[in-house]
Length: 282
Image (cartoon, rainbow, N blue to C red; front, side):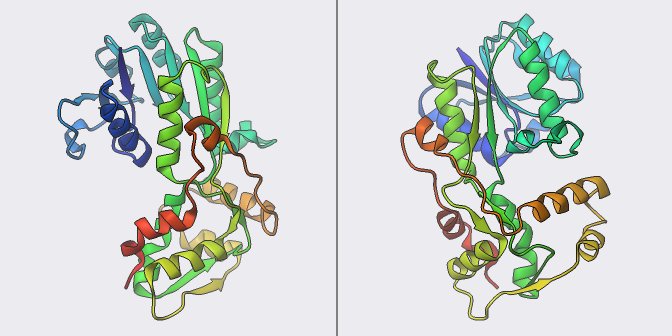
């Protein structure tokens, strides 16, 4: 039985590929640009799969039994049809905990994930949904500022999150792909701690062993949105600001789902910071 892993160039997808390969599973690495995949483990098969190009679906899905799927809604109905035709029996969707919000359908962050969840729920292929919160790797957005100015501009330094290590998401995916017991449900995944942005930055400072402290400079939401306007669409930036405002001073709810699925506690943000400390050193 072969598992197709979409988004194989991503942190979660690449980690899942290695985990499956280490188990001796038959696995196929899918990417819209397979020629750009980093060195794959011996015997791993790369294949082109662009989730916005239905013509790439049949070949990628041939002889595949299960799929690890990123949430791309543009042609999800065609993907479900192609997966069913190919004989796929199980899809594990990497969704987002943002779908749990009251306004998920209209939220530009949650909406695409929810659309894919709903399409899969209405389709004929058994589906398991993973809903992680914020990835610990989101902290890399601060790396350049820390290496150059040592200053981070934040509109809501006291906004809480539940940063989850990407490998924990991959290990949760491995669990539901290889054990039929937990299949067919939706799982809310979080890290083990609720941390503010300011607390996360302090952890990065310690991990990097910086001589000079990191300065957090409070800016208005409007100033922050203007600073990211070159690469972040206004609707997306606005949704992030609304979310951060709603969690400012409000600890994030935590789950033990990672431990329940994998048999060991979720990794802390400090562990992630130690692994990536070089990115934050001057």
